[in-house]
Amino acid sequence: MSPEPRTLTIVALSEMTHGQEADVFVLMTAKEELTTRDGKPYFKVGFRDHAREVNFPIWHDSPWGADCREAWQPGTFYKLRAVYRDTNYGPQLDLRKIREVCKADSADGFAPSMCLPQTRFDAAEMFDELATIARERIDDKPLRELVLHLLGENRSQLLTLPAATRNHHAFVGGWLEHVLSVTRTSIYFADKYDAYYPDMRPRLNKGLVIAGAILHDIGKLREIEEHPQGAEYTAEGNLIGHILQGRDMVREAAVSRAIDRELLLRLEHIIVSHQRLPEWGSPKPPMTPEALLVHYADDLDAKYQMMATILREDTNPGPMTSKKNVLFQKVYRGTP
Image 1: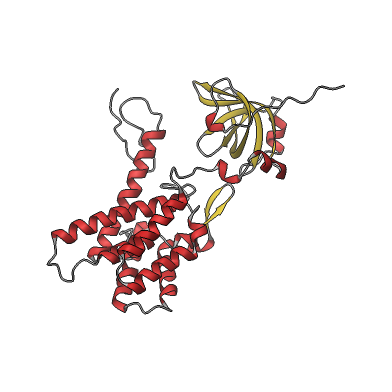
Image 2: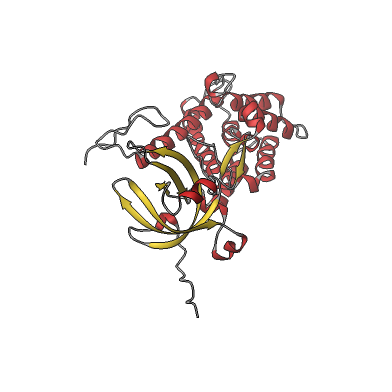
């Protein structure tokens, strides 16, 4: 009688420790055919879950070489049995078994989202806070209803939508994390500068600032589509972008609402100008106080998240990070 196959606990790749052998569900992210300096051929492969990516070689003459060449495909989910090791070359996996994920794996907890980077915060709570801000801080009723309509109509998609395919908040729930942060900062800016300049004419419209902050990236609903292996641009996203599509969505939602034409124009301007420069996608720079505040709240949040990511992920030794990053500059981390 043959022995029962050995079973191992299923764990997250990001929770494995040095020397641990376990079964893990992962997404294959890369397969690149290379050669060493001595001319020895190998594949550099990458696998990830939501918080860790491991890249390691598969040698052509190894037991996995033929399968890697002929069958393994980036963008495919796999179940691995492997030993995790921390090495001088970074995290590595010693494979014991590998197969594609199947339907039965859902009973063991597999879901595509478990292999994608995700927001650290609760998406439903962020959505509820954003809707509460709109209800409580936007005084103009038609404008408030427009914002709540666009949020409510797209709730299920907004709970998971990334803010981008790369660069900043490019993870599940990233849109909500970014937009809520921009909205909170915009409220602070609006309250501060309205108190500083109460005699400005026309006076700062704080409800408009908040509406613009919430809707500045609404066009990403049409620019980005989610796939099991991550977010990609739609055809409309590549050809038109989120700024003009955001303006389209606001105009479409405004048709059946009695929004003041001047107020709608100012809201549209916030959306089309929030990235400020043509090379960043905006056809016009901010030309109203409300648009100015939203632009800087948006830019600050995106840049800060980029810098935080650089400090977390850069492996360059010494007090300065490498300048090979999304900001194209070194960041000072300090000395121990």
